[in-house]
Image (cartoon, rainbow, N blue to C red; front, side, top):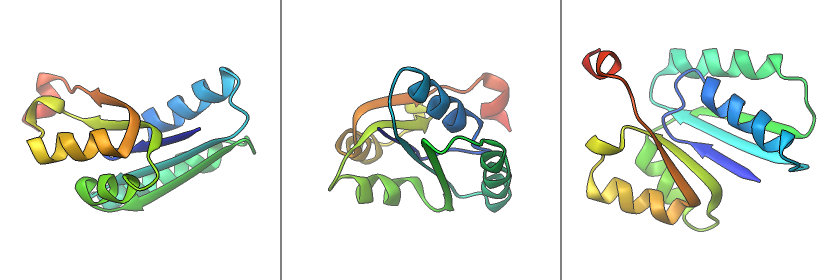
Length: 115
């Protein structure tokens, strides 16, 4: 199973999704998280080192969401996660649909939207 999170922030949700996928019986879970915030990516990398499960591969990179989605389109992920579907452009939503078989939008609270 491959899971891609294009607004992964500190990686907490992606790591949780990876654990859940493995607990559901997937023998190998490959995950990629990307975000534009270098500090968040460093935090995600640190968090991923705490996970000691050889069936789960976690990789985090600094990058733009739309670019990652376009790169995934050739070999779509099983699951794509992204932040804030209400504010996403049409091009972004279309790229997300091409990038994965199941696309899940994470909504954020009013407090997170204001910050």
